[in-house]
Length: 243
Image (spheres, rainbow, N blue to C red):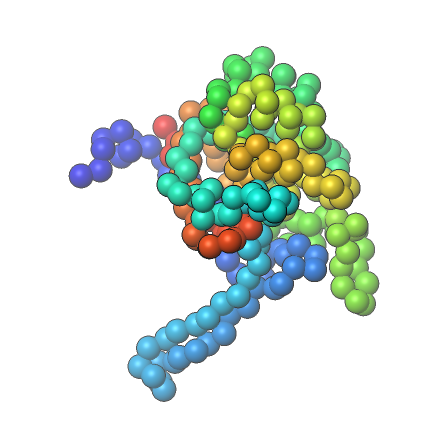
């Protein structure tokens, strides 16, 4: 029987559906579905699909950047169940699509909501989830050429390296989450935020959905993913339990 405490909670799906139409990082493989069996010919339906390990709502693994880093199977066993805090950065992001969340932004959030608890997943709500069905807007593409799109043309809000170091080293968070396609600013070609978090064994969740439906504190999030052996990341199903 389901515990009464869970029955009193509201459930929020924080994952986007996997589709060939969803935004894809420039140069990454596109998501494809191929029919392998059909009702008329075979009596059942079956498809195969291919996608990037870092497409859709996904979790990154340390071996993305570190040769001896853990793979995604190790990061998601057992499936993480974490308290979540959410910082609303959407007003700043609406004013400046290149805005980054800074230490002073964190301190202002803590003045209102209290110190970030150790072991929490720190999520940044930028408002970018509302752009999901418009890939060009979601990626902040400034220009496209006949040969494709370039990562250098992207623009979206992100964490700053300084606030990431503060969250990891001083607040001891379990990881970072964001509703854009990256915790790093597209202008940071060294992926310093990812490297800081993953190098310390923290989770990194990107392309989260519905962060606007979560309160600043009090939420618990369950993260379920594919145990890809050697995987540098994988799509994840993220469910938030809101009191």
